[in-house]
Length: 313
Image 1: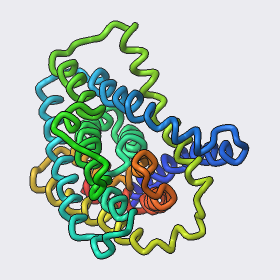
Image 2: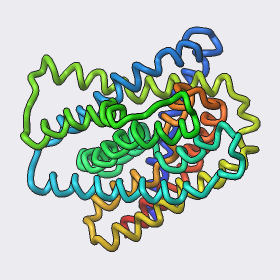
Image 3: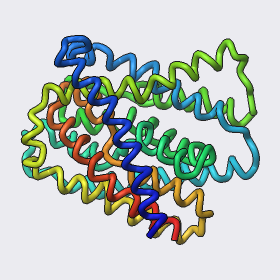
């Protein structure tokens, strides 16, 4: 019970830290210091520069060894399973109203979790640097899939968006993995003149994304947040069903406590913040996306510690 409350406190603290930054973005919009219009114009900087630096930096920050490579590979496989389960569970959902321009956002929110902004900081708080490394495997999968499957999903039915094999491979998520993985495998240490800029830019990821998120919330009617009935089905999939299935898988694989916990932190993270960013970039309803991410994040204060405690039993 003590461990449960300790994990709940850690998760709650992390959420509150994130939402302090969201509040600053919210206030900045109201004061016309950093507005939603500016935030939308900044989306590409987050997608194409900052996020890839996060992925590359996660590889640079870890020393290669047989054990670390094996654990990293397992975390990648478990993350692939988690995303695959999310895709399967979301496939039959939200299909009744084909004209609902938000239905692909609902599906995306079921599948993709807040790994970069929620899982990594929480893993560091609970497990230390080892937790960050294990969760980085999930982050690699997340970035690869969200820039490929995720973009295709959100733009399903949009005839103006054309996809090709080239566009699925040459995107920030996949390219950053192709750059970072050899650096990790061959233990290549970049000179400070290269590594430090990557680290500095990657450190912008969470605060910049939270500020942007805050501007979207500032232009959203939050009183209607609880009225979106799809919210509750999304939370059932994202915060309960997927984590419980992953618990069964990690128990079956008999993973170490630390690795199983890290995999659980990634699998139980609330809907990804880039749900809002993708909604803005691809002309979907950012108000709906903001409400989904906001409520998911608050409810995860309760669900994540429960799932973490179950993983550690």
